[in-house]
Image (cartoon, rainbow, N blue to C red; front, side):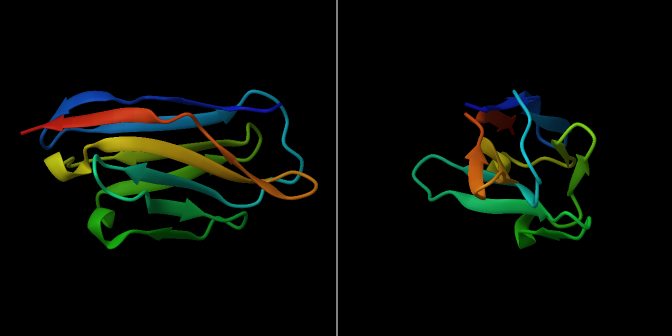
Length: 117
């Protein structure tokens, strides 16, 4: 069973930066889109950023201009560079990869990001 391994979360001060990484523990056939979601305490999980197989990206309005999603297709790894972090970015961040045959969604276990003001 392939699992997604996330890293890079932690505690950072307001205005700081973090870089999240997500790598599968094994191979995934025909990876399509990759994404990062987050869930803050008491709130629903929301899409933060998504990148498709062609490299097109889309972002939640709240992170536009501050976060950048990228991917390394050779490693099936997805990254999230987070700059100018704010307290409201505090959440558990989950990576998501679409792929496999039959196609399915893979989810990471989540990595905690805490931004102190």
